[in-house]
Amino acid sequence: MAEPWLDIVEKLTEFFATDQIEASARQTGFVRRTSTITGKLFLALMTIGAWSTPKTSLAQLAAKGAHLPTPVDLSPEALHQRMTRRAVAFLRALLQRALAKLQTEDRVCDAELFAPFNAVHLADSTGFELPPSLKDLFPGSGGGASTAGAKMQLLWVYLSHSFAQLAWVAGTTPDNKYIDTVVKLAQRGALFLFDLGYFKIKALAQIAEAEAYFLTRLNHQAVAQIHSYLATL
Image 1 (spheres, rainbow, N blue to C red):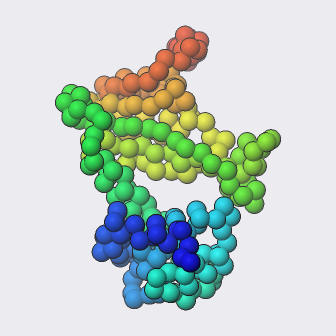
Image 2 (tube, rainbow, N blue to C red):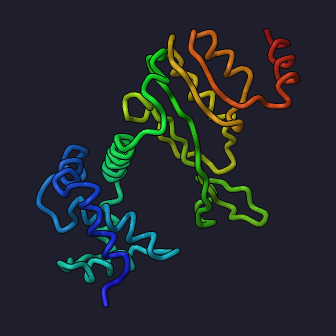
Image 3 (tube, one colour):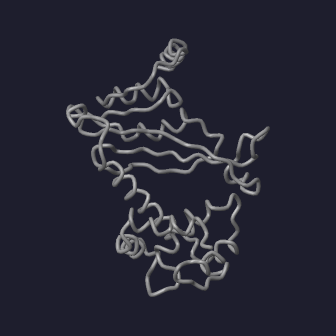
């Protein structure tokens, strides 16, 4: 009986055409010559293949190759050798393509809503636990959670269907610290949207000084933050 994840692997070519996957693999340098590990195979193993088991080892990922409709003989060592910066660039390129494609579907917002702005930046993050062995690279909160954790910070450029920032930071890094990186892109006529976690008076002041705009909820401690910020001027 075929593994459930194999059905999803085939759906990758419904979302990404195979030639698009392989083109991205070549453009990023992940695939430079004919290889057993194609862009599509690597994408499937690193996403659906890994998620089908809570804790997946390289040996388990390699073994999945034998269960594909067209079996592929892989070794854990071969997969490990492909875990490079080029692999990261390849997966990043496909993530951007996926986000752009999703945004071309039915939109929630009327196009005229953002007509006054030359750019619309949406900032958000998501966090997750990592194996404790990664605590030195990505420290977590500990306690009832893992001692290792990470956050993915994403700054999506709504009008151009792309992202300006995609970063992995320690799980202990608060969003209102990362906002300092976000506001470096502030320019006249741009709009920034983010939730209360990113609220920081100094960052909002930087956006205003750049003659840009922001939309966020009001922090109930805003008055104290304003007084603290003004005291530094």
